[in-house]
Image (tube, rainbow, N blue to C red; front, side, top):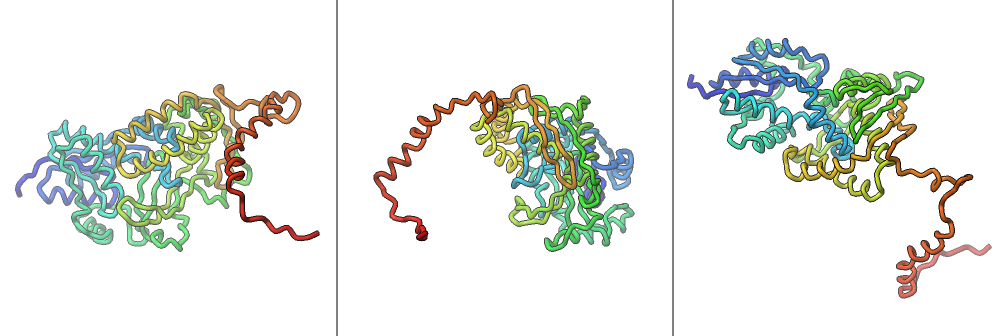
Amino acid sequence: MTKKGKVVLAYSGGLDTSVAAMWLTEQGYEVITMTADVGQQAVDLEAARSKALRSGAIKAYVLDLKKPFVDQFVWPALKANGMYQGTYPLNSALSRPLIAEVMAEIAEREGAVAVAHGCTGKGQDQVRIEVCTNALNPDLQVLAPVRDWHFTREAEMEYAEAHGIPVLATSSSPYSIDDNIWGRSIECGILEDPWNEPPSDAYTLTCDPWDAPDEPEFIEITFEKGIPVALDGAKMDGPDLIAALNERAGKHGVGRIDMLEDRLVGFKSREVYECPGAITLLTAHRALETISLDKRVLAAKKELEVKFGELAYEGYWFSPLREAINAFIDTTQEYVSGVAKVRLYKGQAVVRGLRSPNSIYSHGLATYSEGDAFDHEAAVGFIKIWGLPIKTWRQVHESKEAIEIPAQ
């Protein structure tokens, strides 16, 4: 067999990447795997390394990337209140540019001719990884064995069994799972029918809200310049803080998402997510912005948040537009510091109190009680000027319709 050179494979140890490693080896490539620890549940890094080598790899990188993932991808998304179609917190989408960046760096170090992934031809991840890789190193070839192979998941499981590759997916429980510290994505199987309620075995981060504690739990999240830095007054680094919120909010059933999502590749897909920490932090951050940012800044930022979510979802993380939007958002976050008090209860995270050193809420202007500082007399002239355009229009264009009032 003619050797084709080295290829760096993004390797999770799941069904797709496990069969991809073996298949690439059979095609004549020297496979180097890269397993990224971005906070997956119960990840066994040494088991992943061992399995990669048993699946044909000549070398296996296993890297703890939780901190760079949070600092360089999650926090920028949080500051942007990043959600795709107002619902999906981008948990899987945010890890793909990181994976592409690390694979490109390993490929340069190892002298690889290509990188590879285990994505299918129907998913977003193929687009994200390949677009990001091309942006970082246009000379690298990108291989997609599972996509080009045209095998179904059932065929993949048969291939894995024939080659002695152990996989977690089974015919009776064929979920496709992707998870990291920012959340968990679940698809395939019974979930493909939008009429079916997600079964309980699809969830592992959150309890059913019906079974959640009957007493609410209150937490306080401290932010500095848009970034959470403490939980209930205790300073924590990013990964630890998110992990703590995943546990505490998940216990109350917070963060379950069930949506019909418009995929980048042109069709709708039923997607199920559970993101307890992400939903709690997004809720708290958005509320803190309302007390510390100007009305017009908030309005302009909301428009850019939609575009930010789309760009991250579509694989345009390294685009000049995403970077420009980020520069604007970072400017706004200079003032987003303070504490949000959040109530966790029966599937909901609700902000119940706000405090900020940069608050532009004035009690003297807002109160209707003693100490009212608002200039009531100024309201008369304001109303005249504010309503003048409408008054002038109606003086010229008299309304032809009137409300019929019944006789009394």
